Figure 1 (cartoon, rainbow, N blue to C red):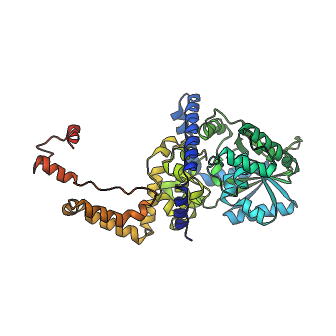
Figure 2: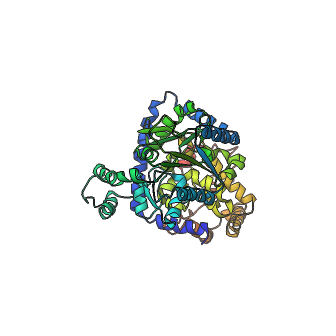
Figure 3: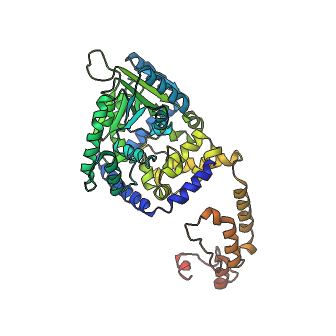
Length: 473
């Protein structure tokens, strides 16, 4: 089945899940309220956003240099770096590390890039025991689902659903509250941090100047993953780079604000290879730098700034499309407004252009982006590129041709409403979908109403057209 067909099928299913939509809207509204309150910590939020946008622009324009700087700094500290052009290469490199270490149990913290390369699926197919230590990721993993939102993986699940699942998995009570449920789950997971052979986590930021890895979180599981296992693997996209360690002073609070409405996340770690005078930490510190289509985004000069994304997930909370269909419907790791820009560029417009067209272009995502990515414009640029490559389907071309012919003729515009309704249904019904009531054309066109009221007078010279004119209809 083609990607567009899978997407359309998933969307039709999601649009019928009214409870999911209600929970998503509720959580999103709560998060937006928290984000708005957190804005107050910035004396000049617009200046902070401009600084962040500039720094990420600087990285995108000089990415080759900063990647080499990061590698040199990490190696000097005693770390190792592996480069992966695609998901298959990344998985192969990780498997080789696990084989070399004779690893059996792997503990993993929250990682969107792990979903992108389908790390869990791969390791399970190789009979490794991989344990999700992030509570949200653990829940969706136990349900056999993908993350619903980049930061709130299980936001679509009700407390009752989670209680019932955990009652079966870890024998927790069916009547406990959320805080108690979280505690039960943490107690169940805790021993795994000490017993795991390898810990895997994702970097929020990589510092080119110092070779450090920066991780921000609220549960503490990422810190535990990077501390107790003898081998720590950091997986990160090549777009995670920041130039200087001082830049974290801006990006940690900015990410916390837009990610969860906090002044600063609960745990913020700046880590690297263990030094000779340190007792704690892994014996081996390995960073796997993954491209997996990011160079394609970098090559698209008009849309390049999409690489500036810091994965806060705020754009999802304001997106009417996401709030109606949810993350899994996209059938991609990166979802929401920014995913509709990056996935077609990274994986190819031929198979994924439909994501860029699944948009209302309302512009709310641009307004809330902490690094000021012009997502609506990038979506339009993706559509432009798809059309220029001749990727538009024949049905769309015929529809727009018919629309152009109709709109170019006054006779067609003034035809009966029955003819218009019949024509619109024939052309647009399948696109409009069965879930929504198809709109009906009014009996008389504006042109007809004007002529009935004013005759043949020309409005631009003889009749002043004001708000009062509308009130007569």
